[in-house]
Amino acid sequence: MKQNRSTYIVFGLLILVASLYRIWDGRPWGFAPQIAMALFAGALIKNKKLAFILPIASMFLSDALYEVLYINGLSPIYGFYQGQIVNYILFASLTFFCFWIRRINWFKIAAASILAPTAYFIVSNFAVWLGGGGWFRPKTFSGLVMTYTDGLPFYRGSVEGTIVFSVLLFGGYYIISRIATAQKAQLA
Image (cartoon, rainbow, N blue to C red; front, side, top):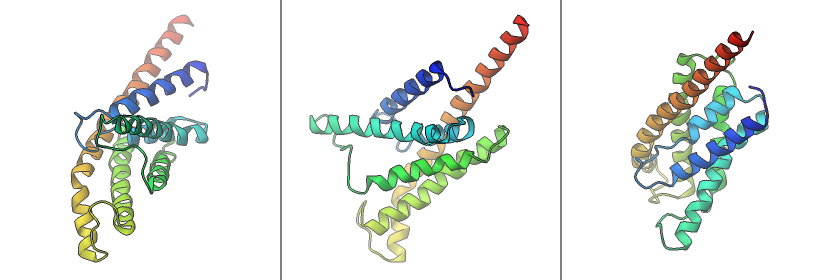
C-alpha cells in the first residue's frame, strides 16, 4: 500500500472511529475492532512502526475518552489503570500475526482472526491472574481456571468482533483495490 497523505487520513479516521466504537456501552463485551486493526496493519502496512501504532493509538484514544467520561461521572469505567502497559504490549504484539501474510487470502485472514484473539485471551487472562487483578482469584491452578472462566464472555465477543471487523477492513480494502485497478485499466 502506497503511503501518502490520503492513506494517513484514512488511518486517522479509522483510529478515531474504532476508539469511539470501543467506548460505546451497547456493544457486546470484547466486541471491538482493535485486534482486527492490528491484523490489518500487520498484513498491509509496509512501515512496521506505523503498523504497530495503528491499534495502540486507537486504544490510547479510547482509554483517554473513558478517563474523561469517568472523571466527569458519566461512566463507571476508568480509562487508565495500573498494569495497562501490559495490555498495550499485548495488542501491539498481535500485529505480528499478519506479518507472515505475504499474499493475502481469506484462509490466512480467518486463521489470524481466530488465533490472535485466542492468544490475547490466554496471555492477558494469565497476566490478570498472575498480577492479582480481576476478581483476585487465588494463585492456584483452580484460581487460574476461574480467571479464564471469568474472561469467557470477553473472549467470545473478541473472536466475533475480530472476525466481523476483519471482514470489513480486509473486504473493504479488497473492494477499493479492485475498483482502483479497474479505473486504471479503463484509463490505459
